[in-house]
Image (cartoon, rainbow, N blue to C red; front, side):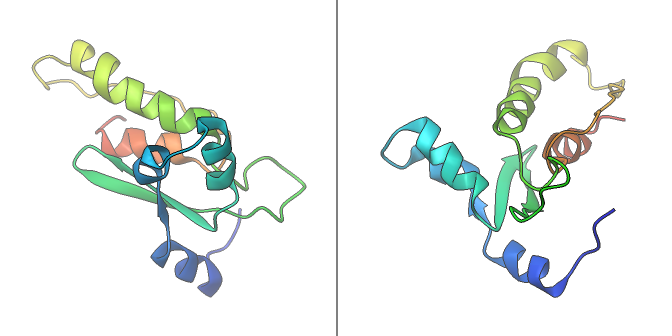
Length: 115
């Protein structure tokens, strides 16, 4: 398990906002590639945000960067799945996040009050 470092704390202070990056002009695939090369990313969800430090130097596993699909799946679940599953907000959805990338999806689901 990676340990937090001073460098990652500095990275989080300079996190690039996902939504702002996608709104910028240019090719979406290029913008997603650029996000993967940033030291940290911020993703707004459930009235707050999740920030994740990235480490492109890791070659032993794929957990160094946020996978692009994590952003889109988190947004899809927030807008389409969770409102239908919990119309009264009375029951927390149980999820299993198997782990791919830095864990942004699991963190986003926690912000969405999933178990």
